[in-house]
Image 1 (tube, rainbow, N blue to C red):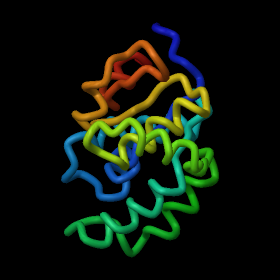
Image 2 (cartoon, helix red, strand yellow; image 1 turned 90 degrees about the horizontal axis):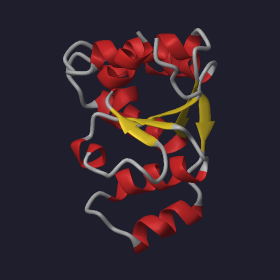
Image 3 (cartoon, rainbow, N blue to C red; image 1 turned 60 degrees about the vertical axis):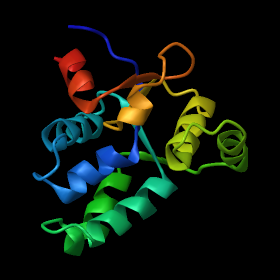
Image 4 (cartoon, rainbow, N blue to C red; image 1 turned 180 degrees about the vertical axis):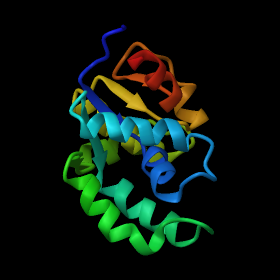
Length: 147
């Protein structure tokens, strides 16, 4: 078994996978990661911005579990750490644009928090070079490393 790092950041799309459900390609892997976090296999983090964005996306997604959103989020918040995106992460994203401001602010905040792993299915973020900051990996990739 490969040892995984202990502090794992879930990008917004990972949260959306779980809330929208089976129609999302990474639903199964993302759900497995939330279950692993709940069991304490690693410490999970999301941002307040991810919660806000996830609600917006769920409200507009056919077949989502939007009516259950408050209950599901309160459940998730009981075992996932919630962090704020600070002004300095916004400033870094503005000064170092890569084409997706939301991705950049999430990345800079996870980097600032000194998190070990950044889980995303966003191709833009996956294209970043691993080396500086958290390891960037897909939900499927992290599930594979855990087994």
